[in-house]
Image 1 (cartoon, rainbow, N blue to C red):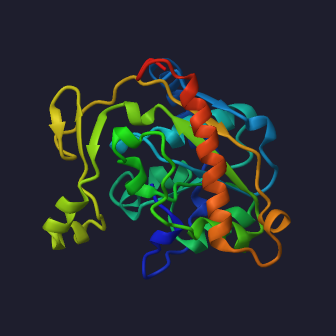
Image 2: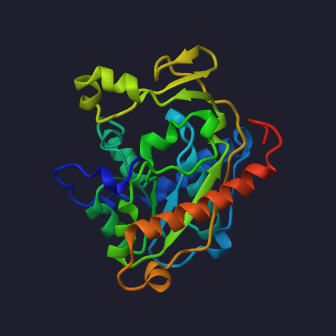
Amino acid sequence: MSSPDDDPSEIAPSEITKWDPAVTERVMSILRPFLKSYHRAEVRGLETFPTGGALVVANHSGGLFAMDVPVFASGFYEKFGFDRPVYTLSHDMLMTGPTGAFFKKAGFIPANHKNADDALRSGGVVVVFPGGDYDVYRPSLSANKIDFDGRTGYVRAALNAGVPIVPTVGIGGQESQLFLTRGTDLAKALGPVARLFRTKILPVSFGFPFGLSAVLPVNMPLPAKITMKTLAPIDIIEEFGEDPDIDEVDAHVRHVMQRALNELAKERRLPVLG
């Protein structure tokens, strides 16, 4: 997944018209039993979710098999139905190849400001992970830390579209493997190869069945219990005025998210089991 800060130099046309509620409903009907059984997934806090366009700002967990989007979308559609689309700002690589059309029908859109703005102004719910790959591969020792790597583009996206931010936190995904390092130094050493794949990291993890992995070989995720919680929406203009300080808003969003994530962490008794 990606962030509005990751704009490509050429902005792609809006992709929101490709969302297909029938396809999405079928996908959710397949995923929901798996999420409920394997990850014992739950989404809390949806009773305070605002109507109309909303920007869901979340931490990102689970490495290659991040379950944040399926868990959130499954809970959202279960409560509100399929009249209101959930869009996810995603890396361009997800949109290429034979599966690209499928992902677009399920609500994944390339992460750029035009797509985000179109989706939000249409009344859709847009999910963004400001930390992107940097966040999803954070070391297990920092599993419960909110870190967007200094990216604040999501604040401008919400302001431009005139929609509230809905801070959302998830816990458990980072227990699906033992994440050892993001591999930033290794990515620097690879230079042009890393730049070709638009990445500044080469994460190293330990999991089942292959043990040590630097992306490859691909280990299976452990059945960690995943809990997500949406927090009270933040109306930026109402809380910070007509000319808000972007960094101040970002600091506030991360603060309320960190506080909520700490509370969820206190509930967990054992890794993976929850």
